[in-house]
Amino acid sequence: MDKPWLSLIIPYHLAYGADFERALSSVYTQIGVDLKQVEVITVNDGGPALPQTLAKRWPLQQVTLARSMGAGVARQAGIDHAHGDYVMFLDADDMLASPMVLHAFLAACADRPDVILAPFWGETRTGDGVAYDLRSALDVASVDAKAYRRGYLDELGLTFHPKLRVYEDVYFVSLALAFTQKTVTLTTPAFVWRLNWQSTGRRNGFAMVADGAMWVRSGRYQLQFLKAHHAKRWAHDFYELLANIYSHMQQYPPQDPQAVAAEVQQLLQENQHWWHLPRVKPLIRELARQKAQAQHLDLAGIDAYLNYLEELA
Image (tube, rainbow, N blue to C red):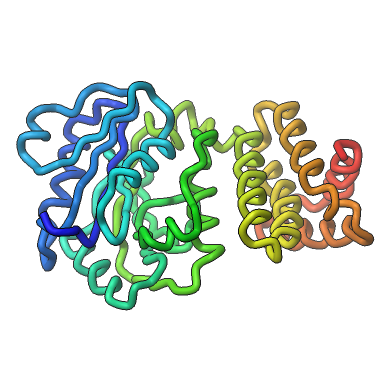
């Protein structure tokens, strides 16, 4: 194979069976592109072996991790084995939204953007059936429906954080978009986020969203990266994160408040210079008010939240 224009990376941990076959079929039935120029890399995150029926049916590059390290580490292993000018991700239980998806992404590559973004469909349960909601191309909670120029990632030094098993996509996508000088946004949905109650984001009744400590940690790691690579944004994003923590705890009461407090305390210590500047508290109060109001959340607890921050600092 000549150097591919795209490396499409599919991490997996469970035996997805027919779902995995559907995902691969959605890739290998693409039209308008030379599939010989698309490198498909499956990354086994310490799970069962890829079924031989799939391995023999399609020309897959297989990478296997000795033990489960999480989707972020698995995706990074795929990047490390990739040869394409662009890298793209697809989970094994999802699928590309149409046979024309890669054709649209290939056309967008002509301008050499750092990141190509597209909206996507989210599958939800409604009564006895399912519905499909259109999700924004700018949704940082999804690393999929986007293609990232490999040279851009290498120049930036951006990788998936090895210590994040959840919210690893928020970390990666947020930073990729924070530094980019050039993006292309497509209008046609790129993939379908299918309903799978065993996926990381949905298992145990969406328990991940209640893991506020890991959400704060992801933000902490983003600030550490910004401090090293884009110091001008460091203070701005620190204040934004403090305001967002209030809204996040309002929406998703943490299952372990002590763990969240420990992460917030660490956050304040790592950024104490910005915390101790004059008039920081009124700034955070106003940011928190604006964000909570925009999401129709309770505003009455903002002063208590500021006292909470003071105590932790």
